[in-house]
Length: 312
Ligand code: AVJ
Image (tube, rainbow, N blue to C red; front, top):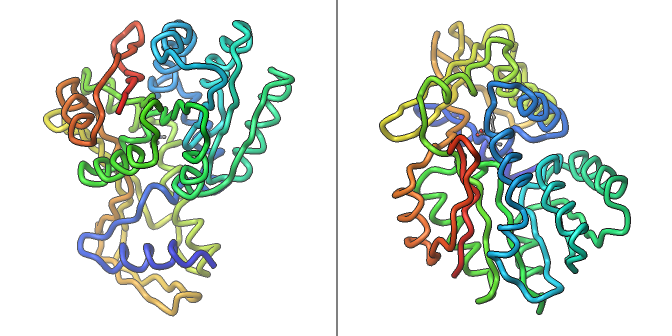
């Protein structure tokens, strides 16, 4: 049993209001549902970042200005559909680099490595499964420069305090000449943002519900998915998309393996996810608060998203 997950589930479900962390969405099934989300036209984030990496990999690498060889360390690599554009550029330009994708899903890493080996044979790659920081501690011992990638607006899932802590920790593990390329989703027409998370096909709902399914499996719990709904909001003032599961009835859920029962009121919420949208001044402030400065922002053609290159 995953003890940290167990502890977090008990803590979150016995709190008022209840919450669960979206980092637990990504078991193998959850990672597959996230693939489906990325294929939805309304989920513009993937298209925007793909646009940046397709059009501007050359400028990104030129701007980073590394002495070869260098490492590309990707935190939360997922399926690699976007990073392949950057890797293709590097291979085509005969740049000497080593690619280290890191993800918590074994299945996602296997699919990614196979895809990359097939499309870019001969690439130097060391895929790793596990927690970012354990692996980051190791890679920071390397004496060649590191380009850290934290793409896909993954930072958006962290609260302001957590984001600062995480970025400070990245900073601590980075050598003076290392750089960070961080993908952040920008504030935009609120309708565009709401459509990305409130899809009528219910894929995002399934993504959230999968967490209850996962809890059922891992902790022998009895969540009945038919008694829960999905709700999400976007607040254009602070840029927060917040997702929730809603208990449709008053009920008691048993987590047998944790010897715990949880009471739900009718319409009681479980907060499951924050997906933060940033303004450019907020990005500046976050960088400087965490010991970085922005070397350059790379934008997609619609200015929906930025891959921001940070230096220590
Ligand atoms: C992968 C964390 C960036 O917050 O937009 C997609 C996950 N959640 N739809 C996001 C997600 C709902 C996604 N991130």
